[in-house]
Amino acid sequence: MELLIGSILAGVGLGWIAVPHCYGMCGPLHISVCALNRTKSFTQLSLFNFGRICGYTFAGFLFGAFGEFINLGPSRFCCELSIYPIRGALLSLLFPGVTIIVVGICLLKRKQLKLPSFNWLSKMLTGGRTKIVAGGACTTLIPCGMLYAAFAMAVGTGSWLGGTIFMLSFVLTQTFFMQLGISVGHLFGNNFKNFFNTSFPWLCILIGLIYIFIFISKIKPI
Image (cartoon, rainbow, N blue to C red; front, side, top):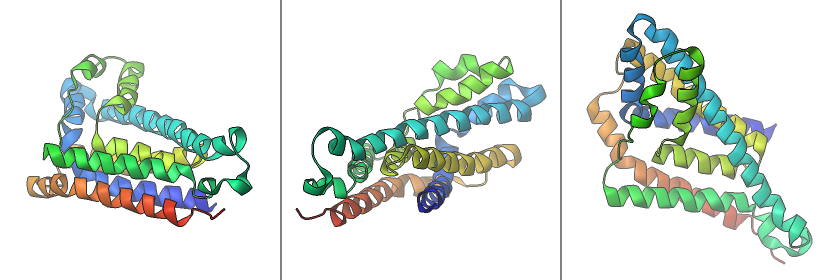
């Protein structure tokens, strides 16, 4: 139960943080869905976001399972738990710590968040329901620093269930405000989005350091 509550709170928290970033990164894609389906824009946008929810949630399952394997692998294939102190630190915590710090450093070097190209998705934004839902699911593959950070945190749950719930909470929170914003107009001005783009790399580094600190604090002496 603690794992589920923690995953939900972390996912919702990151989803809130992601909203202004996602307006800048994925907002044009959402607008394109509406523009290409003017007669039924809300329905098509809802289907597109349903695909995103499915894709992100499945990714959470995969990354959470990877974190669970990292935690259990050494104890099953390498060492006994009693003589393996790093196992006590939960190796899945180290992965997101390092990954998110790397993401933050890369963004600092670039000085700005690069907008991904959506050309490969353009053919999936019109047509039947299956096609547009599949297009939404494919956004899971978009290169995005925030998304990479979310995937790393899903690994950090150390559980397939925790990763699934974390990504579901993340994408539901993010999608609600994305669809609301696109439907009624932008909720965040450019100044706020620019501030977030500037502070996001430092936020990544801070979150990464927290994960590494938790990892170190859990190391058990032999």
